[in-house]
Image (cartoon, rainbow, N blue to C red; front, top):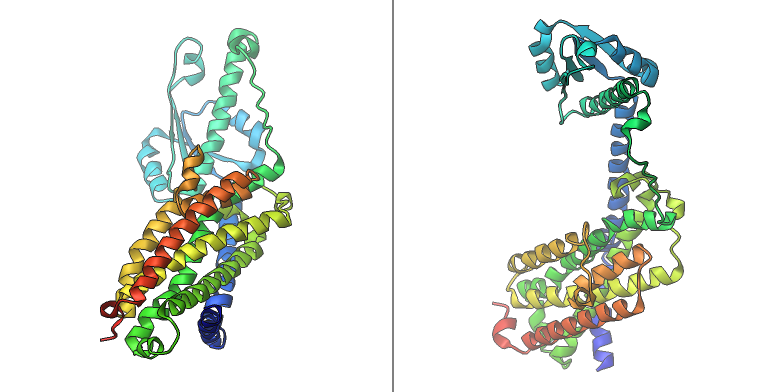
Length: 395
């Protein structure tokens, strides 16, 4: 039995590894593509942020009190340009903001400083929420207005402390490595799940349905090797290919991290990601369990299909379900051990725990066992299809 499965495994792996184009597409291209795309996207995001920070906003005003200009000059110096306008220009300026030709318009009620002593005069601020320069300019204007508000309160009450009830000192007890891990865990578990399934899907549709379409599966089934051994050999080879393809993609993410960390939330130092060998080992184990479950699903659906096109139609809905499950862990994580008992989903949660330094052996084992039981059921069903002549016929 072992020899037969190993023979099929070796045959399928040779088919992938000895085909230079296929090997490049499965093992090299994912990591290379991820590294290039993520580095490029991270660089573009950084550039957009830098452009917004370096841009000097032009703030148009109507009925502007001198206190506004003085406060803005004290806070931003030459980092904000203020233009006084007549009320008749209001509509033109608003239109320019809508078209991205102007940043901010601030309209003060007439005699603002005199009225502020006894009344509540209005201030209208116009920005364009889809223009980065306008949004950042609006935040700067808000800062100036808040400083003015505190200054007026100080004059009115004699001391700003008279308007305050208590002071809040916000302290973050999270460690630097935990903050960095939290940022990485927002996106990476979902990416790894997608990489695993996509790597298996690329070869999986051809490994059974493709051979049906070409008629070569019939020849293989006529050999003295048991059909169950053929099925398991194909599945194991696909699991190896899937895991290798995912590790290539993971390497691409790691390589691009110095340039793409803004895509993972930014705000952390890469040096704070102090993962150990055991962390990577646990992650690979969880990924291997997912790879086995994914290939069992793909092989079963590929065996049920008559050709590659039909296999793609069967596998795509499963791919979408896996994507939704992985994306659901991006912003929330359910409490309780029950969530780790859900096949595949539990593995995704364990990977998230590893990245956030919250992994435990108990939840790790629960996730592995549930997924392996699910994979075993899928493998059993897939093996049964190989013994069904109606399903395995090539025409």
